[in-house]
Length: 237
Ligand SMILES: NC(=O)c1ccc[n+]([C@@H]2O[C@H](COP(=O)([O-])OP(=O)(O)OC[C@H]3O[C@@H](n4cnc5c(N)ncnc54)[C@H](OP(=O)(O)O)[C@@H]3O)[C@@H](O)[C@H]2O)c1
Image (cartoon, rainbow, N blue to C red):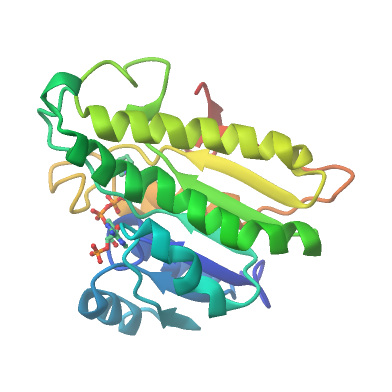
């Protein structure tokens, strides 16, 4: 696996769960990986356990206004995987959520991806090569049980991330400027967020994000992009 040899990838949420697995696999695919999470100690421990060219880069993504300055020195980034997120409490129905809860979830789950995309995607467009993978959630889908009540700040932030993905992909010519922008639902996985009894492994949950980050394609014939993917198959938003 050397699809990403010579490429630089930024992965958020890299200290544990799906982000850590994505970091491991992208490093295995030959990328130089910049691993972002909030807690420096947890991030250092995770990075030490991964082989390959991986650098710990602690950033508090809740400080959205500080993100551009924090990542300004990273240089050219070819792959951005937005995997960091925080989830609302199960009982967070809309009318029981405070504005502070609403904003705290939106900051990390929607506004931070916007800040990171704003920082890195212009360079990808200039160089005519880039991959953006937004790790979304079934809870943010407008179909099926997606936005069916509860977890309100989280569901709405993820629905926003889905809309952001599709909108940006269209703005970038659906791959014809060399940048593929996609979202993925990992399914319910055994992580700190998903809990120990979740049905899916971290490896299975992370697989589609890794596949999207490693996809080939040319400017004249880009692969399908601006889509929502689950287990490497397109699913309705
Ligand atoms: N697990 C599931 O069942 C499931 C289902 C659907 C979707 N997802 C999505 O999959 C992605 C990964 O989830 P996961 O289960 O791996 O989550 P997780 O185990 O809870 O890990 C969350 C990651 O996000 C980072 N993070 C949280 N707040 C941050 C902040 N303010 N600044 C920087 N980093 C921050 C954490 O870093 P620190 O440790 O430093 O805080 C950690 O690395 C998320 O986008 C989630 O919404 C998960």
